[in-house]
Image (cartoon, rainbow, N blue to C red):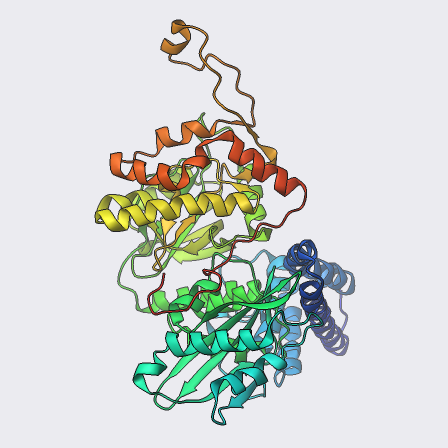
Length: 580
């Protein structure tokens, strides 16, 4: 126990410095891993890229736990002294006041106090209140970009940009790459018909890396408009080449999607880059931009802040989300806010041969896995507090009766011990039912492609019912129900055995042996509820998904560490507006 005010002040100062040093160690390790991305790209070592992606995700929890252990030793029996922690917070705030991205440090500090005290809701005396943390509020104007001015020729301008792309691998055909980018910019922005002149192109200095691709990110400034610019670079055995050029918000919004793996980009000033990206993609929430560049914890803080600010003005209530009732999750939403909340039920029906820990493990797998643009990023939240009046009665009754392990009444409030928050999408079964024939067919074909893309990254959805997939505003089909998800390499794909007799054919139950990991692809189509036209379209394009041979081929490739690429664009295409 601290004996006097002088000793208490010294301890508070020492602990504030230790908390700050802990963040600096975390941030140093984060950036060290990030800086390995260019080397992996040069060497075409995609397995190392994937390992680094997982290692970097795991860093935050490791450093928080280590800091908690260290501070516990320093504080001893004063670990739960809130007056002392209030002083630690004050000292910490003073120390970081002039630092870049200070809100990152505040979020880290909050992680420490919430671990020590198990805070439910918000404890403003010992933590920084998330609704007041605006990481973009004090963004300065540091030099994180370079401007390339048009001195009379777009190809010459692009030659300057591509020349400065640092990579030991030579270009396969440098002149052709320049011509390709120039043509796609001219066509994508309609420069040949509008007679707009490109004044300059501004490029973020650090290159963005994502598994197998490098991305040059910036903007094109014309005489009367600006447009985003992303150049995707591929490293092949024969040299570098341009894989795609994106000049429209919708294209780069998919690239920076909540369904994709995080970028590795080494930034000195994160907030400034996020603000620039927000200008390129004004409809994308700040929380998602922080998340997609790897600052997942700050992304969670921003999502909470966005939600709390929205609730201050919202007039609607939380309600059960549209779609069929989940057997494992209670899913609810606020109609005026574009997310869903997912809580694990206390009990599952007998057909769900899993327990709560299995569900937690599935979501943890997705968090660390390559989501390939087909798995929604589920953010895990703990110990939330909301006024009960915000919950519609039917939803409130279901939460209190079916999620008692997670939900508790506390006076006029409802506390939620554990939940996941995801972007809201239209359930695919509802989308197909309510769309015209053309849009429904397009969605069904993209559903098949989603199954393929997941398989390429070693994910088998398990339950392929349409209700477990959603449709985004870009009309992309995304998988979001993870309780039966597993690795493709853990499955045993089999053809259905031929019936040995008429009696076998007539039996209601399965007459052949089915192991725990057995999967019979030819039965998939029986549960999807397609009408004849949709079924025919699916079979024509994706019929091989119903064969065990296709899945076994994918297994063989995965087991030899073959990286099967799933790109967020159509490779080497001319970007045109609405080309999604």
